[in-house]
Amino acid sequence: MQAQPASASATPSPTTAANRPDYGRSLLPLWPLDPAIAYLNHGGYGATPHEVLADQQRWRLELERGPTRFMQRTLPEALRANAAGLAHFLGAEPTDLVFVENATQGINAVLRSLSFSAGDELLTTTHVYGAVRNTMRHLADRFGAKLIEAPLPYPTLDSQTVIDSLAGSINARTKLLVIDLITSPTALVLPVAALAAKARAVGARILVDAAHAPGQIEFDLPGLGADYVTGNAHKWLFAPKGTAFLWARRDCQAGLHPTTISHGLDQGFVTEFDWVGTRDPSGWLATGAALAFYRRMGGSAIRAHNHALVNEAATLLSRALDGEEGQSPGLRGAMATIRLAGFAGLDRPAALALNDRLWREHGIEVPIIPFGGSLWVRVSAQIYNEMADYRRLADALLAFRGT
Ligand SMILES: Cc1ncc(COP(=O)(O)O)c(C=O)c1O
Image (cartoon, helix red, strand yellow):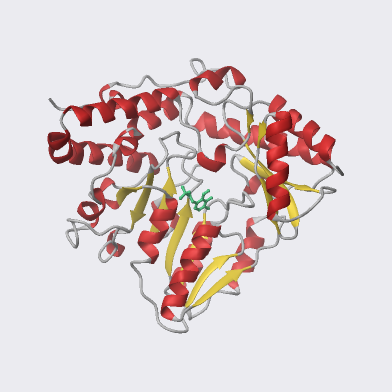
């Protein structure tokens, strides 16, 4: 029997403003999320709805009905069908996109496939994700290259400031630019296409870390002008954990290897990445169900709603706490940061302690992030959130201030 994901066989009915569900707390039962918690960290790890988890479980059971036939006959085709669905969503060609476990793995696959010379410069910004910084540092150490972190002013109010801040660090020695589409600690949507054009002009390779972008903001993947783009489907596209992609421009695919070398070595980009040893492929195969859920919940309307909600939340929190916002609405997707003034401690232990107190004493899950000598609260907005969640956060933070 040929296994079919529920999502691939069903014809989705188009979602319009008229038949779209009402957003807000009433949607929460669609997720396993604890209803006692105001969950304001969708950006952290995503949150997978019941129906996507059910599709994943259907795939698992289909596999276990006949593991050999599934792995050898069903999986290759089903994997490609799901990769094609994700590629189309991102505006990319299916043969240019492969699944990886997460953005960290996508970054590692690219960086550990490249080689550099002593004195070459690997450029990123001070807002780079910690695991990516480590990978770049590892690479720089290996080749005697230099890791350059261009500082970006923060709070950041406009794209030109970002472009100007980075431009001075791009030169003939720059061999690689690793740039976030949305930064993790600071929730900034960076002007990647403009920065990629500058890096390309000096002959550098460009890797875009789009960990947060798919489903959070509208973007045209090939239009970013990158050589490589990696991103997560498990954050803002509702896919199961461990579902991410790596896209490579056609002429950058040769010599690009997965972090695990397996049977497909040197047999082409797709062949090499599609089999990296025996693993549970059910998350990747549930990508179709995740995209179907995303579209049924509104697609672009989700992005518009989340953006508007997080802007309103940022205004509320910054006024209530008398704290600066980390970015202007134009540089924001569905996350915002607000500076916390008057709290005890500015380091990571202090941030973790505040995060824990918010959860234990007020039922709020939200990251507190030390950055640039201040503590920031980073709020996410998702269609199961509403303003009452952010009011609860404002009240809790006010109660804690100075204690
Ligand atoms: C900018 C950025 N890069 C990479 C990652 C790593 O993502 P993952 O843990 O899915 O590998 C994250 C995670 O939040 C991120 O924000």
